Image 1 (cartoon, rainbow, N blue to C red):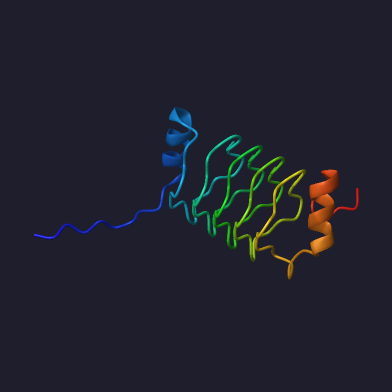
Image 2 (cartoon, rainbow, N blue to C red):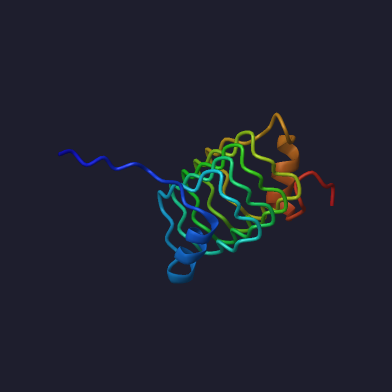
Length: 134
């Protein structure tokens, strides 16, 4: 008898339970979850899949998000101060109002069709919210 392992996406409740125990969410499938205002600061999120997730106003301060998928995620108002997003996929994500102060965006796929690249880079340098001049 062959046992079939089916990948299951985590719910908000399951993510909160994991966060209460540890800061390691590497390679987890968290697609389409409603994670509004959750604090992922300092977490290891390498390779996690947040595609289509609602991460509005979430905090990722100092998080390791290398090779993370945030494809088509709602990142409005999210704080990525000092986050490592190297190789992450943010294409089609909603970044307006997000803060990217000192974030590492090397090899990151950015949603430049939705938000001008200059707005994103200004946020990295000055800490202003994406889409705002100051």
